[in-house]
Image (cartoon, rainbow, N blue to C red; front, side, top):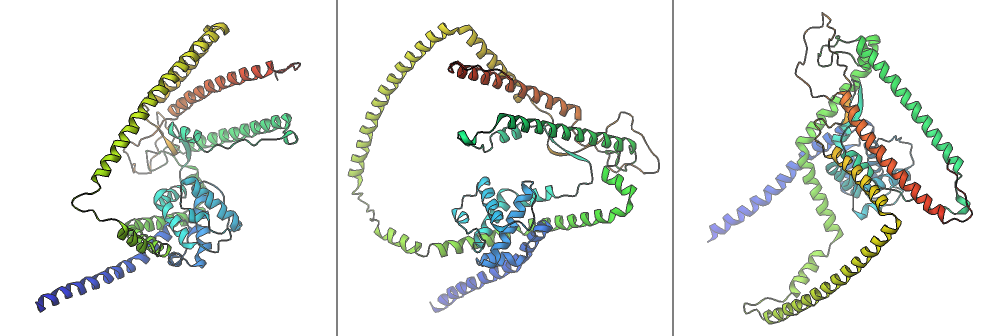
Length: 465
């Protein structure tokens, strides 16, 4: 028997030795994963790898670094301008509101002080949540990539429009008699907005004309025949070759960032295993008496014997519930019959009122509204072959491209999926017509509402502008 016990004891000791070895190996790989994560972040918002180690132990020295990191990353994702000189309380307020907007529901983060003196571990959890939930690195790499071509933003999908309409809406503040805004000021603001919009549209048209000239004059000069012409950046490099050093530095920095991202994707599981240990430590520190309470609850439960002494009481309880359900069903049936009779009476009364007011005109308006909605539904449900959303490169297509000798063969001759500008314009015009019809209907409803209000004002004459 002694040799058997010695063997079992040896297995236990070997298993206990194996666990520290695995922890040591993961501890050796973890700095590489954290380092790759830091290098994959933008250069202006790149923290030191030691900041994560401090945050793991909830050191207050890492709190400000994490607040600034989250502020810079979230500002870049939402396309806002930011500076390191911004006040720390404004940064913290922005980070909290943005995390709330994205659905981060851990209340401990929103209780952190506004001076950034504590909470580095909570900020580490929030950063990891963003990293997983929003695909943080992918979004930042897509936004901060070096653009050597002429690009424009295109959206021909309906989901983006719906999401923008379903966004958070602000409630209009209630103004008192002393806080009312003059209508002439609103008209001035409207005119100023129209003027700025026309100026922006004119500048955009001028930019398109210049792009067209550059693409036309450099047609056939590019080695890649799928493009066929130079972009503004490439044309500027030809005119001023000395600027290539700055572009080369940007491309090298982006290449290093992409290499760090690939390394991070290989070592990412190590980071999430480490975050599991962080969560476990937080649970242990936050609930030290949880195991004792659970033991007390388990000890207080009655043991179920094989004879099931609670079967009779359970059967009686089920019978009582069945009788209650039958009573509720009878009450619901009576309520439904009463509501049905009331609705029939309301429909009958409304029908008589419509006949007095002029039912054909009302029916005609309803029919026009239904036809308008059907047209919009037809446009929405129509199959779309090329639904684009995001940035697209502008490429000039000509029926007879100009060929120039001395540039060698085409680098890429495979067809590239592209959206024609005419198709995009046609879809945008259809959407404009749909929105115009909806605007016309809303204006008609507002006019009718104003007429109803004006009828109740005795002695007041309303003159339309």
